[in-house]
Amino acid sequence: MNRKIPLILTLLLMAIAPSAAPAYLPQGFIGVSPQSAANSADFKLMDEAGVESVRLPVYWFQVQARPPTVADADWSGFDREVGLAAESGIRVMPFVWGSPEWVAPQAIDLPVKSSWQRWGWTKLLREAAGRYGPNGSFWKDNPDLPFLPIRRWEIWNEENIVTFAERPEPAAFARLIRISGRILHRADPGAEVILGGLFGRPLQVPPNVGSGDFLSRFYRARNVKRYFDGVALHPYVARARAMGAQLENLRRIMRVHNDGATPLYVTELGWGSRGGPTRWERGLQGQANQLSQSFAMLSSQRLRWGVAGVWWFTWTDEGGGCSFCRSAGLLTEKRKAKPAWYRFNAWTGGDPDAVPRAFFGPAGEELEVSEEPDVVGEEAIAAPTDRRR
Image (cartoon, rainbow, N blue to C red; front, top):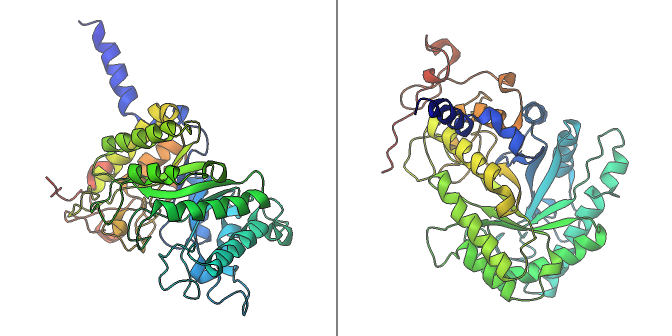
C-alpha cells in the first residue's frame, strides 16, 4: 500500500494541476468572446494572456442601418476591432447576425422569407468576405498590419432560442446556411462556415428548441452539408461535468447523418462569479473551478468529441444583458484579475501577472486598493456564499 501512495499522489496532482494542461491542448485552441467592445489595451492584454482568437459580433443592423440602395455599409466600427486585434497578433472570428429594420420588424428575424431579405443578407456576406478575407480590401488598405484574414464565419447566434430567433425553426435556418455557405465559399474557397452557437439546454421547451433536436431537424431539411464546415455549441450548464452530455449528443446526431468528421466548436462557455441566484453563477472560486474542470474535460475528450476550439465568455464584467453576464468576466470592469484569470492563463501559457489582482469583500464586492486585506494570495479573495442547492 505504501508503494502505491506516491503513484496516487502523482495522479491526483496531474488531475488538478492546470499548469500541466497546455501540453494537452493545441496552440490557439482557447480564445475569448467579449461581451462589450474591447480597446487597444484589452487586445494587448489578450495577447499577454496567450489568446490567439477573439470572437466578435458583426451586427448587420449597425453595419447596414439603411438599405444598400440608398446608403453604403459602414464597416468603420468592425474595421477598428479587426485592426486592433491584428496589431496584437489576434485573429478575429465573427458571428454575423441581426436583421436591420429595412429587412424585418425585429433583429431576431432570420432574413430568408422574401427575396429582398435574402438579397440583403447575400450582399452583406459578400461585402464582408471581400473586405476581410484573404484578398480583402481591408488588408490592402492597411499593409502595415499583420496579415490575419478572417477565414472562419459563424452564422447567427443561438438560433434555437427565442432570444435570437422569433420562432426557432431549423428549416428556416437551413435556408440561411445554404445562402451563407454558397456566398462565403465562393468568395473564399478556404472559408469555414460555422453554424451559430446552439444554446445547449434551454430552460423553456417550447418555444425554445433543444440543441440536439434543432440540429437533427436541421439535417433533415436536406441539402445542407456542403454549405457548412462546423457546428457550434454554447453548453451553459450549472457544473462543467454536464457539458459532456451535450457534446456527446451533438456528435452522435452528426454521425447519424454521416457527418461525423465535421468539427464542433464551443464558441461560448462561461460562468458568473457572483453567488446566485441563477444556476450559472458559481461564486469567485466556483467560477475558477468550473473553468479548470471544463478545460480539463475538453483536454481529455476533445479528440473523441471532435472539438476544434473553445472561446471563454467573457473577457471582463463590463456590459452584458443576461442574468449572469455582469460577473462572467475573467477580469473585473477595472481590468483586475479574478481567480478565473489565473486558471485561464495556466491553460493558455499566458502571463497571469499582466494585470493586478482584484480583492473582494465578503459579499463579493470589489474592494479598492486602499482596502486591500492584510492576507495575500488566493485565500484573500472571498467568495460569496453559494445559494443554489
